[in-house]
Length: 221
Ligand code: AP5
Image 1 (tube, helix red, strand yellow):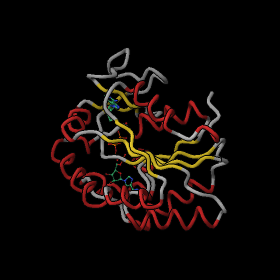
Image 2 (cartoon, rainbow, N blue to C red; image 1 turned 90 degrees about the horizontal axis):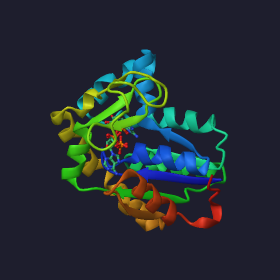
Image 3 (cartoon, rainbow, N blue to C red; image 1 turned 180 degrees about the horizontal axis):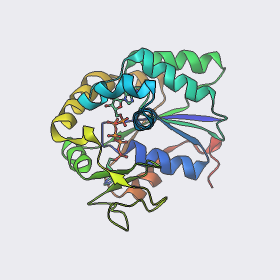
Image 4 (spheres, rainbow, N blue to C red; image 1 turned 30 degrees about the horizontal axis):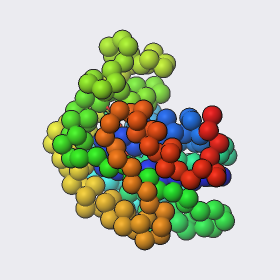
């Protein structure tokens, strides 16, 4: 079992890379943002609880987020391990995760920090489109779908996230620097952090991540 966390600012490419690396290494990809968006789409009780926070670009309260991710982790057989994307997002979440993982006799093996300049983040978010059905991520500039508005993978309808509006992006970046960036030091002190340059092509960034992961636990497909 190999447990990895992807950390980085909104638009750094966590979702794009977590999905690619999970597929390559036969791991389970768990994205807190995707879980919340699915709940919103399905109009569940959880979706109703988180809607206002997400629309504003604020963090969903810890008790809701931690419970949701822990339930998802418990329901995971894990294949070769788990990649967490978007969780933890602040110190209380990181401490809750450490406690839960430790209680199962497991560890967080690596924390991949994807580093991207603020200018590039804003550019990427303004061109992002997502599949409503399978959550695949596209970009009008860098990785457009073959057919406009349609997902290459499942044919689902593509949409722009409401929180990718410029004013909400600014708020999300502020929240990231205030609440999530301190995690980088937290994991550096634990000795699990590795920083990966997140600019360059999607393929190049995937290669950098896989090359930087310690080889002994990897089962590359
Ligand atoms: P979440 O969905 O986690 O959003 P985020 O962290 O803001 O991250 P993004 O999904 O915006 O970016 P990403 O890094 O995954 O980039 P992507 O791969 O898509 O959270 C959304 C909301 O949910 C939060 O605001 C909060 O309300 C709530 N939430 C979620 N988790 C929470 C938690 N733990 N606690 C509390 N609240 C929580 O790429 C972006 C774009 O760039 C795409 O178009 C992509 O195609 C393009 N791209 C990717 N890589 C490259 C590249 N190398 N070159 C060029 N373009 C690229």
